[in-house]
Figure 1 (cartoon, helix red, strand yellow):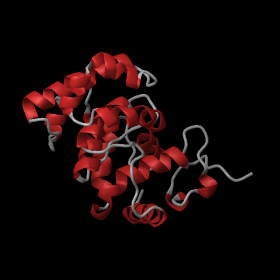
Figure 2 (tube, helix red, strand yellow; figure 1 turned 90 degrees about the vertical axis):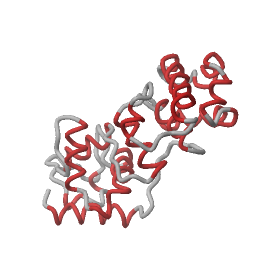
Figure 3 (cartoon, rainbow, N blue to C red; figure 1 turned 180 degrees about the vertical axis):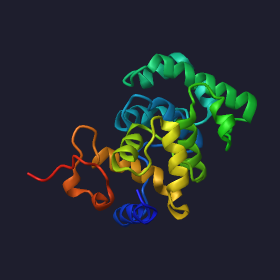
Figure 4 (spheres, rainbow, N blue to C red; figure 1 turned 135 degrees about the horizontal axis):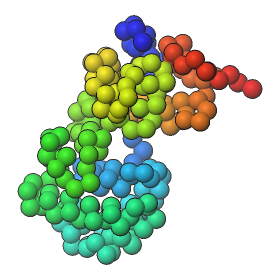
Length: 212
């Protein structure tokens, strides 16, 4: 995709949704971190249903440790892989208390050392909690980047690095959310809704759908 088309691509997304936000519910950086860890291979809607009650009683690492793993599992049992996720949440909470004074670090390397936290999760936390211009490449962003020709790549990291190079500086803060929401609701996996896509003129997808 040409530089001018990329700029227009993001201009269109910005016009449609000037202040995009993630759909996971949280009350502070810690609860955001926990929500993102829980969201792996799960829907944001499903995670939100479970965490509303959880975060009402455990919104800090110490409160989560006080709650205990067994009780934590009862709150998140509707989420896939909840046993493994419960262990990770307890372990990362303990590490935050012991190594970071109970605070979520504003540092990618430190975040990635936490149990259950990979590059994608770290990028989400840095972007949403701390306002860093990071881009977390999930399945939606990976699909949109490759399908449209915006940032082709064979791996999520390759797509992330390309996006870092091509996304205009003034659009990097919100690029993560624009692309996720576009992939979730318009540029869908099975049938992209090209007929109502605001960036269709700049997209190189050859099998575009039409209305009807």
